[in-house]
Image (cartoon, rainbow, N blue to C red):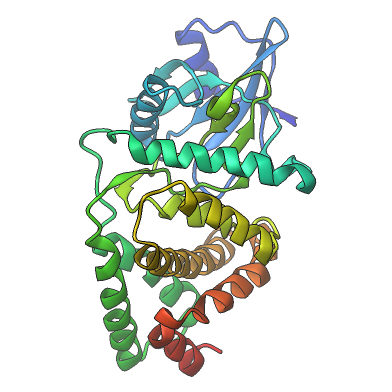
Length: 317
């Protein structure tokens, strides 16, 4: 960790009467937020610098409060300045799911799926936006703009075909009656194992400021089709069946939605990683691209996705 001196950050801490000892910069993620670890009497805390994404901090605080009120483990917020975009919060430590031994993962993943089932049974936060068709299509266009046609002239017929196919697929998912809280970036780097807690509170949650109302399988597919970890087809099947065995649902409809949303998400991820590379010179995410393509190709073999598979076979592969 690199020790830092940031006047705006230090002013926030001084204004809030947080008597820190040292502050260190943590590794930056894909966003425009920055994180730091500070110490008070040998106990650590985190500082989120969301000064470039102030609205996301407002959402983070709102969702944090809802999660805590419903007995989930989100970081306690010790102090905040929403106007300037700073907050001091609980430090979950470094034991992310990405550091868990693969031999221990299935049981911990099953508990995480129990958490998702619990979320789907709770009344979601009020005034939360719906994961609408316009948001889905905007995300899909990241792939078009930053991968398929980056520095190229777009073919209008290809784009029309893309939009038509996807709107038909997404229409099937948006008609689902039960809308739940979806945290969206539900992957191993945003999940922590909190050994001193019980039940689903052992799962520490972060990075949910972009949460929306949507289909209950969205976070499930984010977890099982996580491009940051190489899960076998057998493990993914075990985890999927574990979820569906505990839920009263139309299994065919749920399976179809799982593959539609999973494919949409993987397509978006490819676009996002290339955007990070080209626009922000963040090349570290490119290491996940081969696994992302592998998962995408497996999804495209699902019979219900034959039209989008034909599109990929014609214009991409």
